[in-house]
Length: 243
Image (cartoon, rainbow, N blue to C red):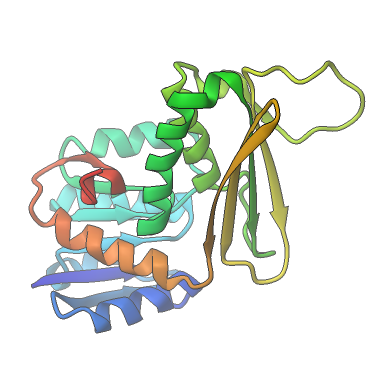
C-alpha cells in the first residue's frame, strides 16, 4: 500500500488530497506538511510526496526527496525555465509525475486538443480562455499553458514564439500562427478552460470545467499509486493514464 505525504495539507487542495487518500483503499496517509515543517524528519513515514504548493517550497521538498530516493507528484505551477530544469535534473534520480493539472478530464481534453489541432489547427485562429478564483497568483494558468503547448507542438510551433497574452490598444490584424491567451480571476471559480478554434463559417469550442478540487486530488492519488512502479524519470498524467 502506497503511503502518501501531503505538502500544504492545510490548503484548499491539501484538504481535498486528505479526503481523496482517505477514500482510496489502495493508499494510506503518511505525513501532513505545512509551512515550517521539516520534511527531512518525515522520511520514514511516506513513499511518495504529493505537492501542490508554491515553486520555492516545491524545490525545497524536491531536494530532500532526491537525496532520499522518494518519488514526487508535483501539481505546483508558476515555475521559471531555470526551475523547470532543476525538476528535470532531479528526475534522473527519482520518479516524478509533474503536471499542471491532475484531473483525468483535463488530460483527456489535452488529447482532444492535440487531435483537433492536427486536423484544423493550421486553418484556425486559436484562443485559450481560462478562469480561476481570486486567490490564484499565476496567469495564464499552468493548465492553459499546457493546452497551448500541446496545440503548438501538434502544429510544429514553439509556444514561446507564438503565444499572445491579452490584447490592448490598436495593433496589426491577428496573425493566424499565434495562440491567444486570456486570464480571468474572480470569486471562487475552481478552474475553467475553453479553447476556441475559429475558422471561416464555423468554430469549435472545447471546454473543461472543474466544480470541485477533488478532481485534482483523485488524479494526484492515482498518479502516486502509478509512480510506485517507476524507478526514475519525469512523467506526465498522459503517462499515468496511458494516453
